[in-house]
Structure formats: C-alpha cells, structure tokens
Image (cartoon, rainbow, N blue to C red; front, side):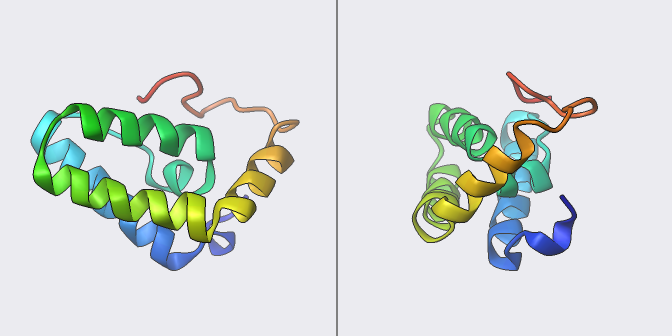
Length: 96
C-alpha cells in the first residue's frame, strides 16, 4: 500500500503520536503502519495509555477516533487486503 491511500488527517495524528511516544517514553513506532493497520494502532493506543500521560491520552483519543470511528471500515478493509501480503520488513506482533 502506498501512503497516498492513507487519509492525511489520520497520518498526521499518527505522526503526532509517534513524536510524543518517542519524546515521553523512548518508544519508536511506524507512523504509516499505525495509520493503516488497525491491530498495530490498537497496540500503540495500549502503550500510550499505559504511560499515564495527559498529552498521550489526548492524542490517543484523536488517533482512536481517526482509525476506528471515521476510518474504521477503511482501515479494516486495508488490513484484510494486506493479510495475504508478506509482512517482511514490518513489525508484526510488537512495536519496533
């Protein structure tokens, strides 16, 4: 999947989450994967909320709304489309 298929608002929120997680917890994430894969986004949300930080909680709420409410069907469809695609080079099962 190329990045032009990802909603720009969702990608912007994912980038904000990436920067905040890196700054506050040292955790490095994959922004495009976060915006396009519901399972990965769910894990990022879990990590962000576990940090118990107000800024991360606010960004997590925005990311959740963008991925699951507004773009939930599209993210789910993209995840299903990618299910048969080799995931070499991606971080499946955990954050990098």
